[in-house]
Length: 275
Length: 297
Image (cartoon, helix red, strand yellow):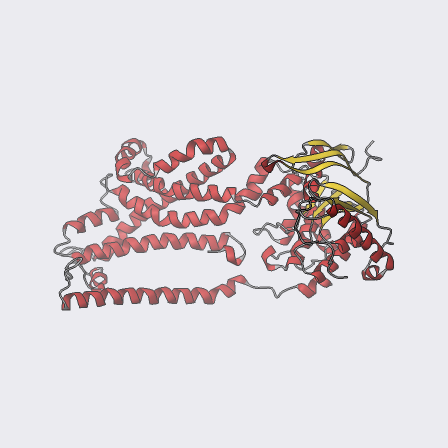
């Protein structure tokens, strides 16, 4: 049964926050197929992070259902089906890079020898060879985020949940890590759900972009990204790349126009960096 | 490949720490010298201009610093050992009580914090009484502690075990309060990550909350260490222990009129003992807690 199950299947999902009585998510339906790279994009407060956290069983929905690989999200969490990466690396200061990456493996009960072998694989994967014994505060922000990615992937979770993982990094580091993330995604054959603020990032990385509108958070549209793989710096110069960006931006603006008129936030996505 | 480009030079924290350490020792010595100079200047001015407020300045109210230190190298009584030998023995005795009290208080304080952090209900029920425990003057509970504890003590602790318990009573409180704070200060996202690894409550406690609390714990231990010395000295009073610093302090109190320097000298030794306790904890922190530089006090 689980072989043909969607990696993520969200049906009729709503989330109401008691405090302030805010409807953060309103009847969301979304399927993610195994091996897909899906980005969630939308204005601040559209509930994209909330959706990601509900998929990860970190908070509970008010209504609706989330199935991950055919099982309830709670079961999936206990089965260690998720690797999670936040905007901040959230590394343990008191652990070296290698020990940080090994942390989930300790929970999973791997013995030391197996852990060490895996850590060295992961260090190679995120290209941090030579930094195993460093402590997090001795690394740059980009390197810390790579450790965080290595940690999330260490136990080979089938589903990688990323909440604006490169949002705090400078543009150059972000582009380099985008390239690396695509390489890792292809090497590990995992499914990725990726929350971002950046249109360019979502188009560059994804096989599909989910555009969300805010208050209440709803899905405003989907864009299939048919750019060929492997993608690299030349992808950003592809004419279709620019077309997709326009598509996403248009949907975002439509979603934004649905908002209450007193919304005085700047049109966040009109001026996009790096274009 | 690309990682090498962002790599920063590897710092060697130990060696880099040596120079600032020397500099801070030098600074402390300098400040001590300035304080002594201020004392002596005030004393000189006070005697020269006959200052009588807030107290008359003379050799009894403000002995010379060099007389206090010099007193250490005078016989403690006629044909007796030097005062510093007497005080050295007394300080060692008190240090033994204080160290046992500190360890006991730190362990109990830490354990209480862990239990309270795991249960909101217990925390709400017990925390007010833990705070209240510190409002009772230690002198008021010391006699009970002596009566309860001393009769049943095994041989190596006989006579002074109750004093350690009194010291522990002063020690546990800052440890509990700070550890509790530290255990609850864990980054909520770090807890979420642990949950995504299907970590058990106990694993979250041992692998995340407790290590994350260490900077707070050590802050508390640095407060508690000198407090345990004070606790031991106070605890000696109602226990009628003559071998510690409290005995010396009581004794020299009685002879303050004739020999004020002896009490001052005893206070210097007591202060040195407290500072030593502090430094031992600070050193342990350096060795045990590896944190970003801004997290190390």
